[in-house]
Structures are given as structure tokens and as C-alpha cells.
Image (cartoon, rainbow, N blue to C red; front, side, top):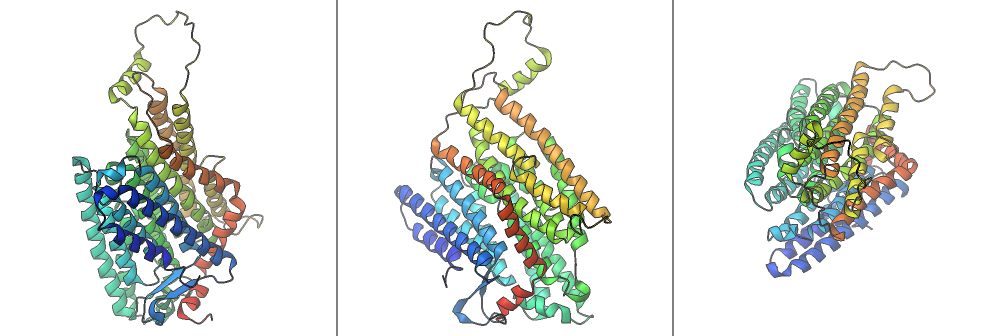
Length: 530
């Protein structure tokens, strides 16, 4: 258990390095190693979550080389980190299993890149200092460049070049912001920064806040906040389904960094810098939700619809961070888990739905619905109803679950999460504590959540009718068990979140309390809690 914290980083690094010299004919061995590695990461993540929630220690600190935190590299696992590790491992496992049929054979280094992608994601969630956060960002981005281009094609190359360009620019901003913060504070350890920021002289505070703003721009570009998220839709739509599924966690890395650093460095103990950037996060998140809602209504392509759903998810989470309320953050963490699983399932499901689609037949179906087919409608047909193949029934049920989850409709976990956030917005002092004054930002966020849910319902209903009910000229797609199983697993986990909403919300509530009161995090990392 002592070295459990480093396992989600060391394991994919070792397995990825082991796969590099393997010959192309060893595809099955690579796949087996990748799946075993991801299963081990999932087990480690669950163990860390249990340890953080019931083990008595809010944070688990791993000091590489046993150096003090102010000088060495530290990895920190708490409830939030463990939750992100679990989501990454689950999505990674499902994407890997889905790729076994054909996507792993589209390029020689798919499994290598995938392991390095998981390593970068896990490292970003576990690192305790800004420099190594940059290192892990670059590792996961370098792997994602290869995965974005996996399978070749003009659309992937074009979208991939745009994706690489925006992320290189964001990395430059990252370095500039980190350099400015280090120049003012003399440290890059997150806990040490939280301890030093209240004592920063007034003449240096504008430089500190400017560096934090530049650093925030880099994170917000990765989180796809408007207007920095123009790259997301084309890139995710062009990527292969397994790559797009794991990419849905990459935008969550930017959200995680904003959530972690804003509440750690600019908490109520940060002096005059307390709450720095919160208003901008709230406003930017609401605008991003609106942009995502317009995008889901405007697109006719299922992959772009899923990408627009990522924008709505990112906007909701950023606005929740900007709201600055413990209860809103608690509901947002449940929403993060639910939306990540649902969007990952949707990206995998889209590939199955598109197999039986004929674009010309879709146009013909719409035309016939609008103008008729010229035959006498009064003639009776002996056949009543249409027989639905079992494959289409399963795909339709999965699509319906994705629609309910992303729109936040009952009875699934998306509704529970949105209800928790809306309840906290309408009752900032808690239920039953008398009338409260709701801020204009709270009303705006409430309206954005309701309108985005309505837009998602309309867009998903339209897409479902076109993909599942417009039967003219459509063939039933051939779907293997190994392909539909990951989709069913992700949606089953969302149903499990609904059934276990009480314990899950208690976990997210405890995580939110720790995030908004980071004194225990600082003491644990700096070695004062022992």
C-alpha cells in the first residue's frame, strides 16, 4: 500500500515501454498487456478512493526519493484524484475492449500510445506541483496527437493539425504563467504555494495574479471554454471512436486543474486574492453552456453532437467552480462522473449506429415524411406495426440512456447531479433555512442548465429519429458482443450511480468540503499532519 499512489503512473509507463519493441504480429499480446494494465490501474484507483474516504487520511502523499515536498517530486491522492483515476481507468478499459475488433489494427503503435495517454492523465491527477503538471500535460498531449491521427484520413490530419497548434499555444501560456508564479513565490509545489500566497507583498500580488490568469488561460483552452474551445468539435468528430472516448477525459483534465488550483491557491485563506477569477469562471462557463446548446441544435452529425455535449459538460463544471459553493461543487463532481461515462458511451455507440446509415436514405426519409410518397394513404395495409431487430432495439435503448443522461432527465444519474446543483443554487444556505437571496449569477446558471437540457433533448430526439426510426434503405448493422459490451458497461455504471446516489453524494460532498477547506491538504503534503 505504501507505493500504491505511484502505480497508476509507473504501470502504464512500464507496459508502454515494453510494447515498443514488440513486432506488429504480437497484436494479441499487446492487447492483453494493455487490458491487464488498465484493470490493475482500476484496482489501484478504487483502493485509493477507499483509503481516502474511509482510511482516516484525507490525502495520501508519496515523496519520490523521500525528499521534502518543497524540494522533491510529490504525488498526492485524495478523494478528487481517486475519482478522476477511476473514471480514466474505466473509460480506458472500455475503449481498449472496443478497439479489439478493428481499430487496434489501424496503426502499429495504438496500444503504446494508449498506455502513455493513460500515464499522462493519471500523472496530471496525482501530481502535487505545477512543473510536473506541465510534464504530464505534455505526455498526454504527445500521445493524444498520435491517437488523433490514428487511422489516417484527410479529415483526421486537418483536425489534428488544428488540435496540435492550439495545444502548443496553450503549452506556451502554461510555461509563461508558471514562470511568473515561480518568480513571485519561489516555489511550484501546490501546497507550498497555498501557504505562501497570503503573505505575498502587495506590490508583487498583481504579478502573481497575472501569472495565475495566464496559467488559467492554458487550462481553460484544454477545458474548451468559449471562445477557446473551437478546436474540440472537429477533433473529436474526426478521431477514431476509442480515441474520442478517452479524449472525453482530456477536457476534464483542464476542469480538474482549474478546480484544484482555484480552490487551493485562492481559498478564503488567500487574503485579498481570495476567490480570484471566480466571477470570470462563472460567466465563461455559462457562455460555454449556451454555445454548446446552440451547437447541439445546429449540427446534423452525431459525432459533432457528442463533441458539443462535451462543451456543455465543460461549461457546467466551470460555472459550478465559479459559483464557489460547497453543495454546488458536490453536485458538479457527480455530474462530472456521469457526463464522462455517458459521453464516452456515446462516442462508442455512434460508430455502431453509423454502420447502417445511408445518407441518401436519410434525405429520402425526410422528404417522404414531408411530402408523402404519392401513393394512396387510404389503402389499408394488412401488416400492423414494424418488427424491430434485436440489434436495433439494443442500440436504441443505449441511445435513449445517453440522451437522458446528457439532458439531465429522470431517472438516471444526470438528473440526480443536475438536481443537486439546482437545489444548491436555489438554497445557498441549505434547505429549510428560510428565504435566501439568490445572486444574478445563480439565476443565470439555473437558466443555462435548464435551457441546455432542453436543447440536448431536442437534438438527441432528432438524431434518434434519423438514426433509428428512418428505416428507408437502412440495413441493420452487424454488431459484435465485444463492441456493445463496453457501451453497456458504461451505461450500467451510470445506472449504478443512480441506484447508489446517496453514498456517491456523500463521497462527493466530503470531497467538496476538502476542496473548499484545503488546510488538511496543505498540512498533509507539507508533512505537518503526521
